[in-house]
Length: 285
Image (tube, rainbow, N blue to C red; front, side, top):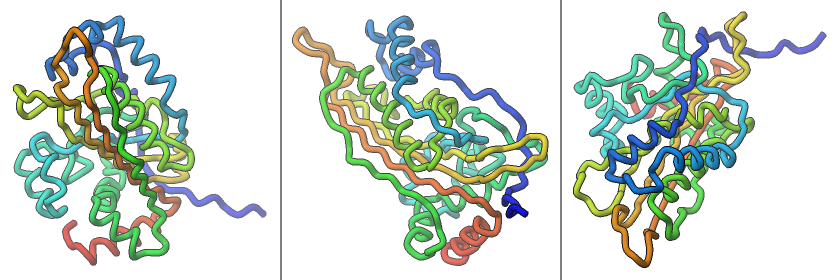
């Protein structure tokens, strides 16, 4: 008799992942002051085709894609989870799945309206201080961290953003054995160009991140999945004098730093074990 396959009960509904389109990309570029010939929709469609050709074809899907609440993202490294939860609650922008994050875009699935999709537990585990502690203190913790070397070079501003898209998608997917579903990556990238807090700044210098709730091999008929988990990808893009043009060059000094961390669970016992251990160490809920 074969060994029964362990599965996780979760109630999800099918969703249409948010696409990356030339129209939305052009608006994002315009919001940061880029309206050059490379930002025309025909050119952007070519860029998107190129990006899609270079991002991985993974199989792990998403059921929520979340983002730091605007105005708080630069503070997350200094706040504890409990402090951040209070700050986000005050804005009224938290997702129903999370205490410290807001909804960003749509993934492959969405939780049934009556459920939380283990959002509170996964969100707590992915918080960087908690994740790092679990990685260093629990031998059973299966989390993966990827901190590739920073990317530096001279690029046109739109080319630099195209590189951001490709590297963010590749780094995020690399933390998962089966990789991240391409439609989920595209959804993450659909609003990845964050505006500057100072519109008059000469350098584009922005950090941002996404938290992606993961599901593997979900069967909507049985409402069972082979695994659930969470992936966080963070990036910092700097483009020096990104709006400046000269007769000699349109290339700009560019630096891109990315890091990602993820964990997948095949049993709820393993997830709750990590969650309770981190909670005992850090408190909060």
